Amino acid sequence: MNRDWLEKDFYKILGVSENASLDEIKKNYKKLARENHPDLNPDNPEAEKRFKDISEASAVLTDQQKRQEYDQVRAMGPSAFGGQGGFNVDDLGDIFGNLGDIFGFGGAGRRKGQSYQTNLTISFVESASGLETKVPLRKEVVCTDCRGNGSENGTAYHTCNICGGSGQTASNQGFFSFAQPCQACRGQGNVIDKQCKTCKAQGIVIKNETVKVKIPAGVDNGTVIRLRGYGGPGDNNAPDGDLLVQIAVEPHKYFKRNGSDLILEAPLLFTEAALGATIKIPTLEKQISLKIPPGTPSGKTFKVKGEGITPQGRRSGDLYVKVYLNPPQNLSRSAKKHLESFRDQFESGDNPRDYLYE
Ligand SMILES: [Zn+2]
Ligand SMILES: [Zn+2]
Image (cartoon, rainbow, N blue to C red; front, side):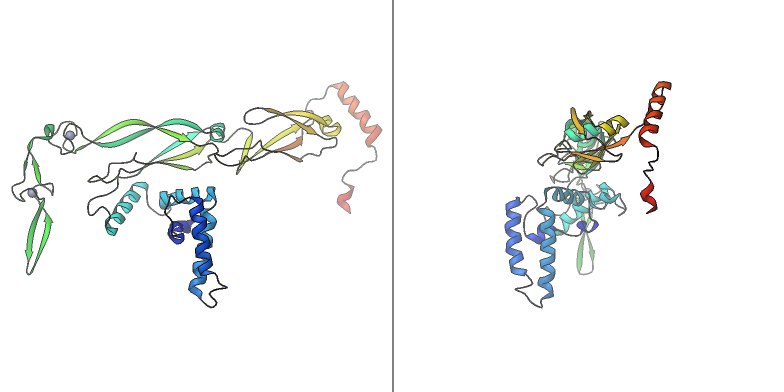
């Protein structure tokens, strides 16, 4: 992840929409790269900068994994970097809403709902295979008893007689006339005679529900899954906010992960290391055989192709088995005798560390 991703709109740079296909992205990249290529634009620093930006944008958007990360970073904003930006998700909802106002889509007061965030902890094995589960959701919904206007049954109100229902009053200052929210009805246009008991005149109630969430195979710790429309209600028919599910993956007792590859450390008996053996090794789902050649040193790593993690839509990683020698801890008297005789017969005079003095 890259902090300046927040500032850079790669989609805009390449002139494509956020759901553009890979082919569209490649096509636009080729066209723009040709137009701005330094060879065709000598001594043109602007074209050179554009060429760099285009190349950077294409490198990210044509790599499925990078594109996904980029989308997530931009969806989360500064909080994708541990909240160092001083924003939380709710602030972001406001920021997006205000941008909507500035650019005029939707118009004033039509704001997308707040985004909610929730955390979900899954096991290492679940992260590898993917799963479908449910997350709890505390959602603000429009009160059905009053249909959101806050009065009993939605009918116990009258039109404000100060502003005539417009919610605004005009105040004249010299030549100009300014519209202000009406004080009497607080800009609502209506005055409530009797409050709705269900929502205490708020027009909104809290609903506890659960949402199904599909976790794709191969998700890594920190991945954020966006569920559109499961956030707070939007104003005036604006879309509802989103629910951002941040995934935490519990570490495995034995397996470690490096991208799509798995790493496993496994002990060898010293006879297995010396004489060679076919040993059994677990993968995340099954058991496999691994051939240890005679004379295998401690620390040697064996690659087992295709037994890593298979992220959805991508090729599978590999399993790396790192072996180490595990000498017997409690030798019986007879075993000790055998080893001593082995030493006296085959190792007397040998110093395996001789080369360290060269
Ligand atoms: Zn009024
Ligand atoms: Zn109500």
